[in-house]
Image (cartoon, rainbow, N blue to C red):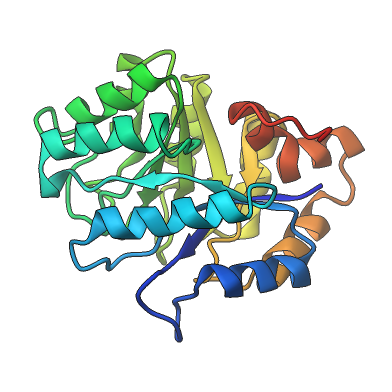
Length: 256
């Protein structure tokens, strides 16, 4: 079983670094990936509701493959964002919410813009996914994630990219922050292989998940990289990282 914990789809664009759900499913077949945590790929031309509906329709049609997350941009209105969180979880049945302060240009711990939305997510009892990358090292810094984790102790938070996505990275800071906050789980993509290995050695195999960052990386290549990285580890550790950890966080029944 392999679950990819980070893929993006676009309802409006195809070609280059944009793919539709149909192409995502093709890539999953090629890479032998069973399920994929799926969210938007901006830009969505401010039509965020329609774009999230696209992910919802994909999940509804492919419920055994697509694990949908809502995408929230608080710049479009905090109250609107809070209402969207409720709808995406209660009506769409999304597994959680993704917020990206790099692409949407906000500080992830902004007390007026971001925190009210995170409060709403925490109230749903689902999972928050945060872009944590050196491409916006101030807005999405791991130490801002630490503040959120300390404020919302029961909220499970995915640190997508674990501080990578740039020539300089914040992976060491991400690992350090995660050591002190058990509600943080790292998604090891957009980073070099050694930092992923360091995260596993430091935090254990239950705190790191495989993700490909499709379509910005090739899913089949990322699967091969992880298999090579994990080949000398116990099978239980491999299962945790490739599927078990994200399945546990999202309350998936892998026996189905």
